[in-house]
Amino acid sequence: MAQINVKDLTFGYESAAENVFEHVNFSVDTNWKLGFAGRNGKGKTTFLKLLMGEFEYSGKISTTTAFDYFPYQVTEAQRELPLSAFMEELAANIEDWRVLIELDKLNAPAEILYRRFKELSNGEQTKALLAVLFSRDNYFLLIDEPTNHLDAGAREEVKEYLKSKKGFILVSHDRDLLDACIDHILVLNRSTIEVQAGTFSSWWENKARADAFHESENEKHLKEIGKLKEAAKRADRWASKSESSKIGYDPIKEPDRSISTRSHIGAKTKKMEKQKASFEKRIGREIEEKEGLLNDIEEKTELKFFPTKYFRKRMIYAQDYTFSYTGGERPILRGLNLDLGIGERLILKGGNGCGKSTLIKAILAANDGYRNAHPEACEAFMSNAKTCGTLEVGSGLTISYICQDTSQLKGSLSDHIVKNGLDETLFKAVLRQMDFDRSQFTKNMEEYSEGQKKKVLIASSLVTSADLYIWDEPLNYIDVFSRMQLEELILKFGPSMILVEHDARFTEKVGTRELILQ
Image 1 (cartoon, rainbow, N blue to C red):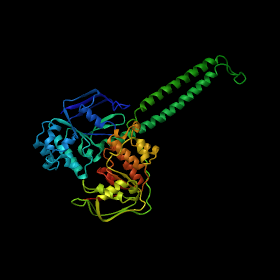
Image 2: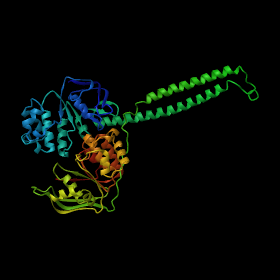
Image 3: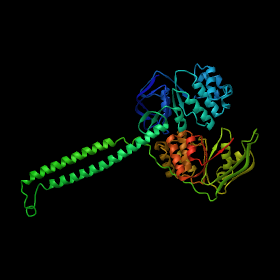
Image 4: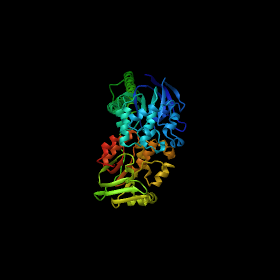
């Protein structure tokens, strides 16, 4: 067992106004199964790259262990080859037999090593690269979001595989995966870094208790500060009044007073001034004890949502609906039956390639409003389609759609706002509520992280009034705290939705029914 010791680590990007890390200190053991959590943009991937030696930094990271990083960067030229032909380029001294053993543990066939990499599904690519990653000894493994773009079945297999391993950092926003696979957690809070034994859920419970205590202490300090300030004001008023009475007096109104009274008044004034100074000192101590109490509290900011209520009970109806692409060997959807009413939140489930996104595109193409707004895309989709059976979308139904792909986000945020007819103030307020830093507002969206791009799409949908919200894998790259915000939002407003999402914890909470596509 070795340790990774981080001492006085400071790092920032040249283009950023603030450092990502500022005088950070912590230690972790290399036999831990360490989860890594934090808001988007807090520096999770950056820290992994610092461990890999990709950036210069001040401070010290000391360890005797070597690191390896997932996902490997596979070039376009390598994608044309089978993994067996280039895995030595990804990780030196790899032996085929060890990779095959790891593939078997992942329930993956050996033949995926010998097919062209680009022909493998997302799940097969992930499993193949994980098998390479775990085929070498004496490496501490840095695993960055391994389940993005995987269907539920592949996620479960990766989860079971990682449960049996140790000696890694796992960056993930999936609570189910973190709870199943880790025994320690490192969290990038708003202003501190915390390392704790246990799972994400045990850390979250501890944090909730700590936050409640800190909020209570903060409230007590605020009340005490208020009382002390009022007492200091009274002492100041009394001292000023007493001091002003030292010189001059009316013998008619104050017959019992003489010049000798001045010394008594002076002593009284001095005592009151001392009391005031004492109160101010105590105020300073209370403020000092209050400082930092709320720095790491995850504020429960309520997001805004503007769903409308469709005037008919039924929104979408399908009977014996079959869809196939022209020239395809088999139908993508076969004999589908669906009756979606208002207020329902339908979770589409099934493996990659079962037709979840195809069904969504077919619904959008059958919707008058979406077809009028995106005529070319709908025409291109339907021109390559063969359908039979019935698929009906309610007349006048307004749909707000989030697609998987973020590549269309280009140019400035202002251009995006104008193009989509969004209320700028409201849109930016929702982004801020999702912890989107104001400094990003002036950047081109090409510079955004994938998590930030997803937040742009989600915020755009949230501020769009609609009868039905269709979200296709909206949570890829979205941090766990924003996921919990969205859960609370959906449960509060109860919009009608169709969701494709592989975060089991999320869909269990927000879904009202499931449709499993084979």
